[in-house]
Image (cartoon, rainbow, N blue to C red; front, side, top):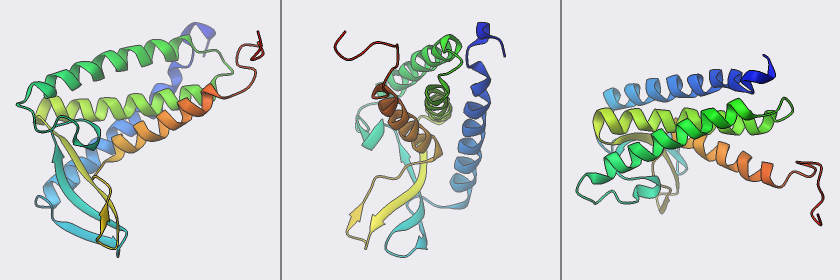
Length: 167
């Protein structure tokens, strides 16, 4: 694809993340009752069904409902910025394109949940011997997390602009 379109071809990955996220949420939302657990790896990993009206780690979940539209608006703005950023990437910025595409796919997956259902469907539960539980999450959350890690790592790449740290 020409430089005019930057790395927009990476939108295919965003679409794959979005579809897998929505399909998996649909499956678990229709297969499990709330907080039901199916143990996959005893003492470590289970499927469960949980709804999150807040953001990461249920941030603002206890509020009266305004957070639904607040987080949806943030997702729309972030998604638009990510598409523009993808379009402006240079041909050699493949890792950055991968990171942005992952975050975009995840953001759109959770956006759809918020707008349609008023909550995000979570179903992955990581725990340790029933003593410690990481908050339930989903495919979109995983993609956002991996994308954010890649974005952070990209910041530390040497020779990003041909300048040294002392310039």
